[in-house]
Length: 371
Image (cartoon, rainbow, N blue to C red; front, side):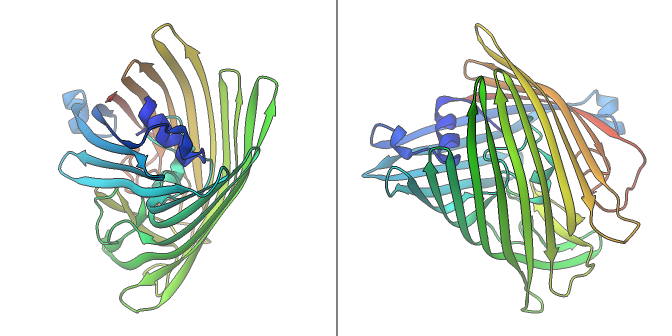
C-alpha cells in the first residue's frame, strides 16, 4: 500500500506539499508496481487448514511529470477480479509557495502522508480519514515551517453504489439487511501544520478540519458530516513517533439507524459507528543496511463510539511488523491483531456490537516490486 522508489517518492513529496519544480524535464514518466501477498488468519478454519494463502495482490500503473508547466499525477490499480483508479489530477505551480491540483486528488486531513507505517494502514483509513481521494481541487501553501492545505471537493471518485474503490467512502446500498441511500457531496477541508526543527530531527504539529454534506437519494434532502483532528509526526535520528486524536460525525437525513452508517472500500461494504473518536499511536525505528533498510514498527488505533446505545463497542487494531527495502523491492511483514475490528477478525464492522469475544489475529506478508 506504500512504496519508496524515486518515482513514487516524488509523488509522495508532491502530496506532502513540495514543489513540482523538482521534476526537471518536460515529459511524463511511467512506472508501476507488482505485488503478491501471503496471509494467514487464525480465525478462519480454511486458512488454518491450508496454512494460509499466497496470491496475486495487484498491478499498478503510475504516470507522473509535466508538459509546458502543467503537471500530471495518476495511478490505476488492477486487483484480483476488480480494478480502480487511486488518483488522477493535474497540478500547476502558481509561484514558489502555492500549488493547485485539480481532479481526483488527496483529501488533506490528518497527518500529512499516512497515519501508519504498515501495509495494513491505520484505523482511520477504514472510516475514510487516511489516504482518501475525492473529486475536486486542492491548494497547497509551503511557507517553510508553515504549511497549509485547502480542499474543495464536489463528490467521491465513483458512484456511492460502487464498492470497487481504493478510498473508503460512504456506500449506497443494503448492508446487513439495512438500506442506505447516502452519498458524499460538497466537502471542504483545511489542514494547517507547523514544522519544528530541533537537534537530531523535526516534528510536524498540526490540526485538520473537514465538513461536508450527505445527500439522501431517496428523500432528496441533505444531512451533514464533520471531522476534526490534532496530529503530530516527530522524528529523532532513526526513530519516528506519530500521534493523532480525532472526532467525526455522520448526521444523515432520515437514517436507518442514527448510530451507524455504511461505507465501502476494496470491493466490499460494511457498517461503522456514525459518531466516534479515533486515537492513533505509532512508533517506528529504521536500521540502514548496506543493501537498503529495515524499519520495525508498532501501529495502534482505537475507536470509541460516541453513543448511549450500550450495544456499540470499542474497536481496536494493533499492527506489529517490519518493512524491508532492498533495491526495487519493498516487503511488509505484519502481525495484525484486532478486537471488534473490520478486516482484522470476524467482525464485519467498526464500532458496532461485538460479534465474538477477544482478539483475532492474522499474519500478512506483502512482496512488492517497484519500477
